[in-house]
Length: 483
Image (cartoon, rainbow, N blue to C red; front, top):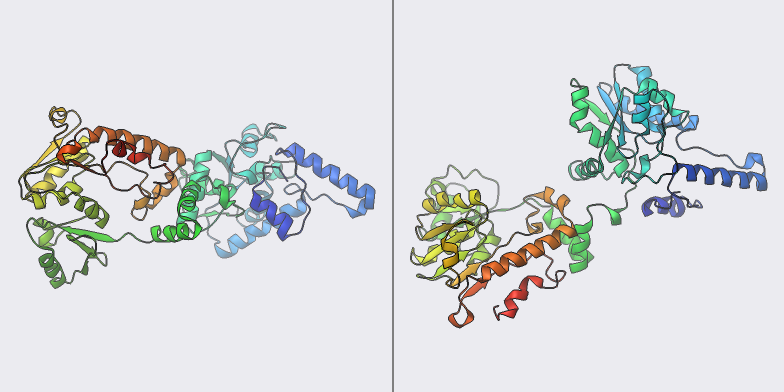
């Protein structure tokens, strides 16, 4: 076995099946040389009949046996337009193609290869057997399809496989994640190659009439400890332990709950609760936010009169709790430094009774100006929008009673609402967020009244990573005796 084989494969061969494992350099030539050497030693020691080399993809018995996959596919779905199969040495697709084309020549056989190991693709293009570069370590996450075609499989691929497509490492990774998340199937990246081709534009541009496509998912030997996207769980596990990390992941896999925030400047929560309940809208009062309601089942509230009148909005309870930390009184000066479209500012403003001023700043002008409609609907007038180029920004330094900084982050706390974000997490990106948060924080700090005049700066806690970032996000606060 190649010395870089995933540990799960090594464990299965050695521990589960009881085989003796010999490691070699991760090249096809090294594997073949070691195999021949071992067979020669065994024959010399025990006799010629006592050892036989069975090639994993060039032995015709293996190829014929793999044809049974085609038998099973057509037995379950005989009306397929195409079958997509990952190709390494070509044994699997050769067996499937031989059977399927014998039964129905109209079914397309499509090969899938990594761009970094494309022996079949190059062979089809050249009209002759072309192997991957000899004695070269091929760097691809699809370790099971790094081999080249051989003398047994090349003729079958050339004659019976209709086309071979290649995909990038990122496409392989994305397809493997996609299958795990949507189909709930754990597959190794070698299978992800076929999924990547089956879901790619290039396939349908070449064969636009394809409707029903079968994809062979052969291989689930995946090393869960070294997945390209496993950093997020490792970070959770390191911080809170395996048990809590698993519980957290289970929670984040649940559907997101819908919360409402009542505009208490215009109406009480009790009245909105009564109005909605009378219309058979299932709501409960939230325990942590005094202005929140929980929608216990999905409902279309956009046509509800109280929503149109601005009596309530849809807003997560977490945002309401954060905003409640800003205890602004009438006449106070408040700056929401990363305001977005103004959701938190809308929570802060009602107790001020339209006296004092709420300033909204964000680097995204378009997002910031969305808040105009929301404030108008909520009947709140004491607000000012401050895009990055606004001349008043400089003049407001040192004058704010309250500054709220809900800085951009990894958004791991919002995975229930945007589950695909977990695939984009990396530690490198986390440290970039930490650096950006510190930069934003230090800029926002300039707007707070100094400690002798009781200015306050509020920052929401950062997901699970406070310990792992060394509390760096709070360094500027402590140095100025803010808490």
